[in-house]
Amino acid sequence: PSRVRRQVFSSLGQGCYAMSLFRNSRDNDGYNDTWRIQGIEAYENISINVFTRWGDEVFVYNGSGASYTDVQNQWDGKFKNKDLPTGSYLYVLILGDNDATYKGTISLIK
Image (cartoon, rainbow, N blue to C red; front, side, top):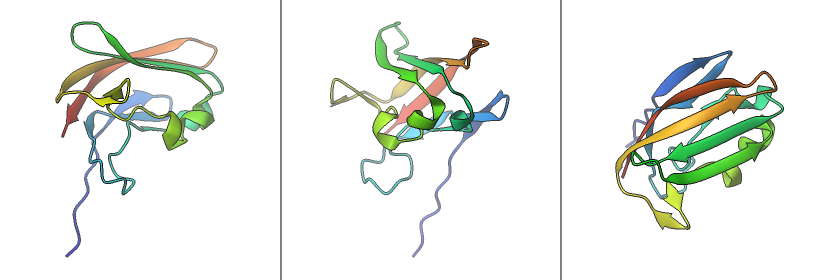
């Protein structure tokens, strides 16, 4: 039997959509294994920071949007190679040289 896979995205404007629900499935099937941002490859310079609800930084990425599309560079729901607990995490995303800043939440479920 086939499995239904759903992914929930929030529009960031400017052609970008960030996953707002992230389930680290740990089965490496390519679905929900990392936090993806659709359309990010259009930006030369981006900055991504992910924080716990208490403000602790658990992920940092600075580089090109094209490089972030590589799953090796995407957030995998871990901090220092340890699985983070289910919960809400905050992100700050800065797109391009015009410093368009987007903030939102990610629901990490297991």
